[in-house]
Structure formats: C-alpha cells, structure tokens
Length: 174
Length: 189
Image (tube, rainbow over all chains, first blue to last red; front, top):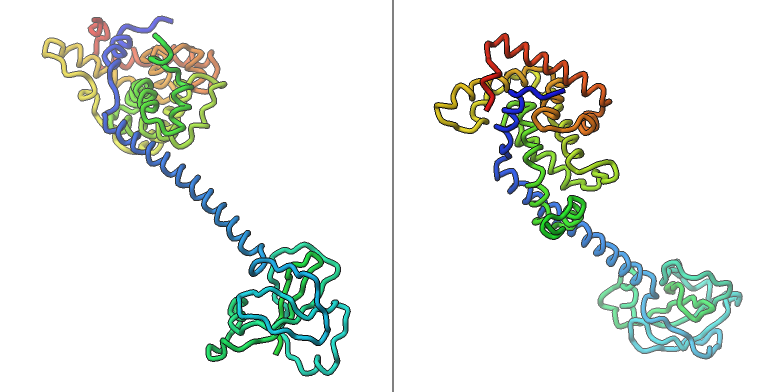
C-alpha cells in the first residue's frame, strides 16, 4: 500500500518537531536526583549494616574485657576485697555450682536475679559461681539504681563463670 | 563512524543507570523527536506531547530495567510506553474540548505557502478526528514510516490487523478531507 502524498507531506513538515528544551532540563535534573537518592539509599543501607554490626559487637561482648580466671583460689566462704574498677580481675572465692552454700548465709542474703553480661553466649554445662566485692558504682552499669552518697562503698555480687572462663551473668547480693 | 562517536542504545543505557548525564542526553536527543511527534500527532496538543515525552523518559530513568533489549530495540519500547501514556491521556481528556494548536505546531512559513499550510492543517484535523486505533496506525506507518511489523509490535496486534486498519484509516481520511473541501493534491511539494 502506497502512502498518500498528503500524508508524506505532513510527515516532512513535522520531521523536525521536537520537545521544548525545558523537558530535557527537567529530565536531567530528575536523573541527578534519582542517582543521588540511589547513593543515599545505598549509603544508608551500609550505615545501618555497620551500626547493626557495631551494636551486635557491643552487646555480644562481655560487659568488660573478658576475665579469664587464672588458677582458682577456692575457699568457699572466703571473700576477697578487690580494688575499685569497672570490672576488676577476679581472683576470688570460687565454688562449683553444685556446691550448697551454707544454709545460714542463704537465709540472710537478698539477691537480685542473674543479669546476663553476654548476649547469646555459647551453651555450657558446668560453671562456677564466684563471690566478689565491687564498688556500688558497678550497679549503674547494669541499670540498677544507686545511692550517690554510697558510691564508694562496696557491694557483693555473684558472678557466674562458664567453662571457658568467661563471665556469663551477675547477681548482686545484699 | 566509530562506536565511541555513535554509541549504541544499550551502552548508553548502561551508563545512564550509573548516573551518566551525558549518556542520558545522547539517548534522549536520539529518541525524543519521534516520541514527541507521535504524542503530538495523536493528541494535537504540544503541552500534552511534552508531558508524554517527559513521562516516557521519566519511566526510563526510574526503572531502566523495564526495558529488555532481548524483546526489541529501545525505540519500539519507547513508542510502546508513549502509546500507553497517550491512551491514558486521551481517556482522561475524553470529555474535554480538543486544543487547536495545529497552526502553531507547523512551521511559520511565508504567505506564499499559506494554501499548503491550510491544507496540512485540514489533514491534521482529519487525522485527529479518526478513532484512536485508526489514528495511531496512520501516525506510526504513514507519518513515522514504521514497518507494519514494528507497528504491530508497538500496537500489540497482528500485522494483518495493521494492514487492514491502515487501509480503512486512509479511506476514512480521504472521505473526511473531501467533505471539508480540502484538496490533498495541493500538499504536493
């Protein structure tokens, strides 16, 4: 089928028609915005990932530098004063979990629940409970209220030590 | 001409995805004319044609993956997006009076060319008065000189349908022009 000449003439007349330059400018601006937003989204994604990893690392590690107990110096009722530090080295009275504490002592003590100091720790079958004395200021590290006037005083705590020598949980004793 | 001087659409698209404004500009300038003219000839409105052109290329910017090179050339894809956009626009403006921009869309020629221009205006009006499915086949095959196969791909119909619609559309056009008293022979250059 041959094209009628009047249509061919119209096609020739319109051949050079094109959109206004403003359309091109608007599209270029849209392209830049779009590309910027892609980079912002990517950067946000990496930032969120980094933040999540940092959070995971912070929560996953023990409350302070893991304390590996050296040779246990064990006398069940012995309590050793330790210097003031956020988490001092533990060379303390140690006793196996299965060890029954003296009945009289249990009766007098008021303890908090165990507060985990590791997130998602490796499971362990046997552990040790270590009685330590800490500055009261250590309570704040676990979100517990502290009387500021008694910050310098010491408070007893039981630290649950896993087979790997890492502290798993702590409870405070009154 | 080397590939560097005349890069293909796929290469330009790849660079555009990475935010290369020059690649987009080349791509846009290569394809905007046909897209704009198609929209203009389908709607008779420069404003709508520019909106359609902008929308077509915005779709490419937002979602370049929507074009699959395995399914055909970029030009066909852009025509397809333009066609859908034009149809949406026509549907939206169905009850609005059509704009009369035909005169301003044509080049501003001298008085000696007035008769010819008037006839072209009549031809434009006659095309715009065609039903949309006849109009688009005239625009694609006769004004854009697209092959029946390519037009069929853009319109999403069989080649035979393109042939029959085109034949019917040309007859309708001739009848309209005869009724308005326009003499298509005066369009001859």
